[in-house]
Length: 496
Image (cartoon, rainbow, N blue to C red; front, side):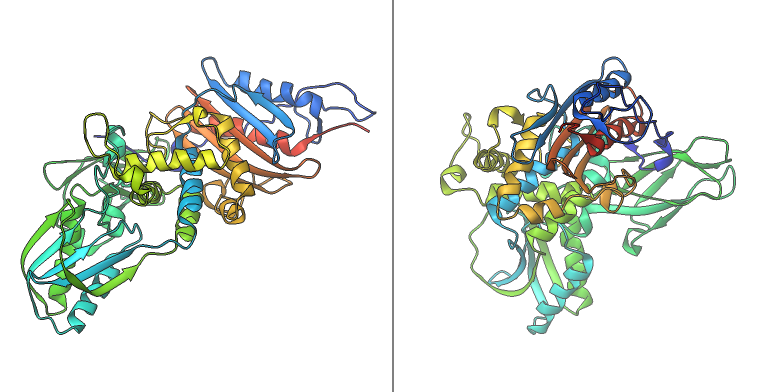
């Protein structure tokens, strides 16, 4: 039951020197010797990228494609049509399909209905819903004059099927970043807290972000504070049978506190309990409570509601900070809005596919309409946590190119992190002389970066770079990829 810590010091490494390789002289403008900054001729680009790739270590697999936006000029390719684990680069496919299929203005409502049996609250997967918004819903209910609810009923049937991908790894299921994407989400379906170093030898102090979690969770705190010459690490475990969190690891005395979180075990129950508490806080007594995960025909009048943000804003967060929960929700929204023909389909055993499974089918069809070859990708989730995702560099580049041609191309590109400025690229490639907007991806042994680069000579360049089976540290993987991207910013035709 181990969850990897996000502590950046675990991955810090020295910045690798850029690997440039001497190339031929063209029209009096030389390619540069290895290690020297400045332009590099196009004829030398392949050798320079190969030097970085081959120097990364034996066993590493690289998939790379660099093309002009129109696809008429290829600057570099390496196993471009082969399958690779893409990590969070899957979100490029998910968000492209969601924008295309649903449009940037799409929203859902969390609704409360008054029925003959009492009050029914219906969740439709809004990943932004907070406890404060549940309080607003309770206030709206109380404003109708209700003082007692005979039965409070949570309808959690909107997303049929599993809330957590059954093929995710054990540590991902427990972590806050792997929280379940069910119909009734509140406060991101996670339990957040912060770990503070204390005196040397003392356990880390736990500070709960929400007062309601204090005392509800039993802590098995095996952590400790260490001196400055020791390594920092953290590992968290969460029981599936009881409200217990195990904390192991070490943080250096005087260092910054570390925010962490674990996923809710029973998100529907947590949602209903919190809404019941909010109703009672508004003077509405609550009787029996129940949850249904199967659709039931109920006649009622909507008496309270709150709308989600627009899909466009959710796509921005999904790509900018690589939000797994948002990506999994987008996938399920694709599934529940599928065509009637697809919704009516059953699998070979007669089983009704889940919302996530239908979402994958919709994604495949939408991407094909954008010009992405369906034979070049096979995805298993919306976020990239699954190790059964297989995507080629060419499929990623085709997605980027297809979205650039779409009515939502500008919004899609703006959702990507900007090198040296925002999101997951805030601390990477800040020295780039040109604009770079790209999606990152990282899981064990895997790093990826795909996006757009504004080149002074070639115009907008699309690129996808993935490394699999790497035994190097995360920082070394990223450094190698960043060095390749730096070469792309410096390459010139050296002709004329």
